[in-house]
View 1: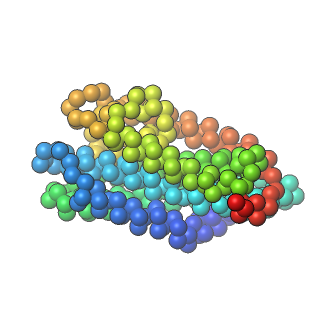
View 2: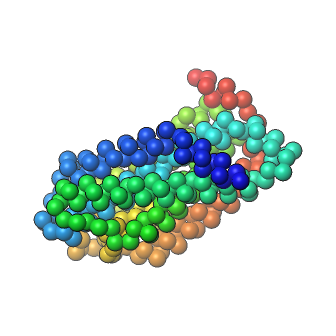
Length: 269
């Protein structure tokens, strides 16, 4: 199956594991031991702090796949264009197979983030900060992996077909840039509710936070646990599913029209 080939290739991709796992371990360490908090010395507050870092880094780690996905489509644009036209390979099969493989990797990365967050924050706090719904963390990681793939595929096909491959280097990092932008902004400032619910990045982050914390989380993550409204997680689940469906449709429509381009164009200044 194509998905098996994609999965094996991604498992051997050093960039995914280097930036998606080992670089995230650095940030988990920083969150546990360097960046201080004003929370009282109680287990519930340490659990909340650990869950925020898990949500942020779980989101960012899956975005590292997007760069590898983007370059896979970039290097294979001619093969895909001719393959869809002259072979039995269908755009829907290609997209679904790649989405399955990236969702599995997303679940694996989420599992690693869960484990190391638990170990480091528990050691730092002196409390056993066990994640409340670890299985939900993996499921959300699956969804995050699929979303990142669909977003990356749409961006790179648009660049390939309409903007020119000279922009491919920047375009491949757009999903990661957006995750850093929304992720760090959410934990440091108060975002308006329409962004908290409408952005798929905040939806993924908040759902990951909830899966670790196990309780209702405030709309304003940088504020107090007791003050302000609580996030409606059902709405966020619905919004994330709608985003994945929408991106799936757009990805199917765009990938079937991918144009063969010389990859040398992407290496020109």
